[in-house]
Length: 241
Ligand SMILES: Nc1ncnc2c1ncn2[C@@H]1O[C@H](COP(=O)(O)OP(=O)(O)OP(=O)(O)O)[C@@H](O)[C@H]1O
Ligand SMILES: [Mg+2]
Image 1: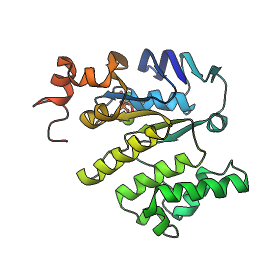
Image 2 (image 1 turned 135 degrees about the vertical axis):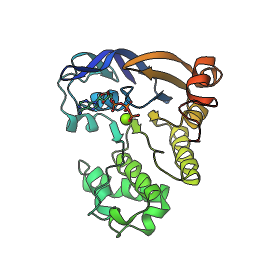
Image 3 (image 1 turned 90 degrees about the vertical axis):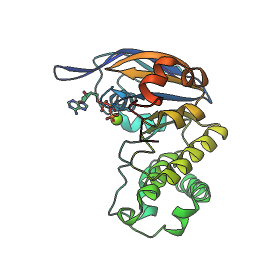
Image 4 (image 1 turned 60 degrees about the horizontal axis):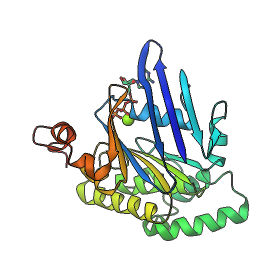
């Protein structure tokens, strides 16, 4: 579905992503985990075309994304829920979903809206409410729902559980697992290592712009390095879930 090879991204003199390669197969849920500043968001932004790449290749369903503008990547089946949710706070829930589905025909839009509101009953209840008045968890649901409006074949999620209460985090992970079960291919970036390894098929660990570990998620959950760095007492995850 998605093949990233030798991807390098820099911000001026700062190399944020240093030649990483990974792939996501059709129907898979793949997670990229790593500490703050590892280059996870930069990687996702590069896949979406939101930051220019220095070198490397990004191929979606056999088609290179080189030179494809960001707005056209959505039409190719890629969809993105960005870090920090980025809902349009002064717009209603329904208008946020309209924005997500603005490339659809009227009939496709109506069909997708019906299906997304069925998936997220809380958004149906609050459809006329400004997105800025929603709770953090509801805003996250809206960010995911907005990304689902185009019925993506490959959904990219950046830190969907960030800053949410534990009960809501559990709910967000349930939704992601349901989406995967419904056949959507998912690339998930998370700092909640334990929960993301629990629902993912495979995982990559990023540190300082490089991939330092990869493998089946259940194997990585038992990996001593991953355990010591991200899961054990005194790890970056301790006290965080
Ligand atoms: N717009 C920017 N300009 C300059 N440097 C940037 C910019 N965005 C990110 N960086 C730098 O690139 C590196 C990777 O950042 P990135 O946001 O991709 O990390 P991340 O793994 O998503 O971190 P986090 O877990 O905190 O979200 C960091 O050193 C960061 O300071
Ligand atoms: Mg990030």
